Image (spheres, rainbow, N blue to C red):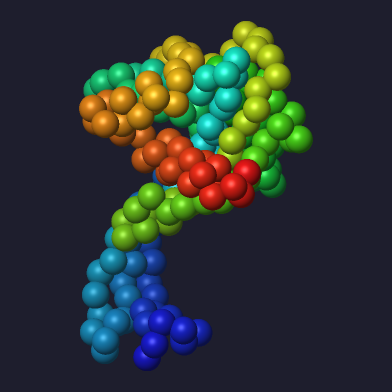
Length: 185
C-alpha cells in the first residue's frame, strides 16, 4: 500500500470515549497489519491562535498555565465554537482575552496545523490580526493574563532564550514570517 491509497491502513474495531468539558479521551481497538492493537488519543475541539499587530508591535500575553504551574508567554487564542469560522473565532477570542479589536477585513489567514497528531486530533487555525483599537477585555474567570506589546526582535530573543514555548504561537510566527519573507503577504 502507498500513501496515496484511499483505504486507511488502520481499521477501527471498537471505540470508547470519556468526555470532559474541552477534551475527550478516546480508547480504540484497531486492526493494523493483521493485528488488533489498542490506540488511545485525545479529541480536542478545534482552536484558533491569533498573531495580533498593534501600535507597530506584536501583542503577546503572559498567562498562568495551570497544567504546568507557571506563567508563559503566548499569543491569544482559544476554542472555535460550533458553526464559527476561524476568523470570527479569532476576532472574538482576541477581544475577550486582550480587549484588542479587529474586523474580518483586518484578518489574514495563515493556515492551520496539527500540534501533535500522534496523540490528538487537535487542529489549530492560525490568523494574523491588524488591530484597530483596544477596549476592556472580557476574560473568563480561569484566565489569569496580562497583555504586552513586543517588537519582532524582542520576540525572537524570547524564542532564542526558550522563554516563548507556545507551540501555536511559534507556528503562527513561523508561518507569518515565512509568508512575509517570500512576499506572499
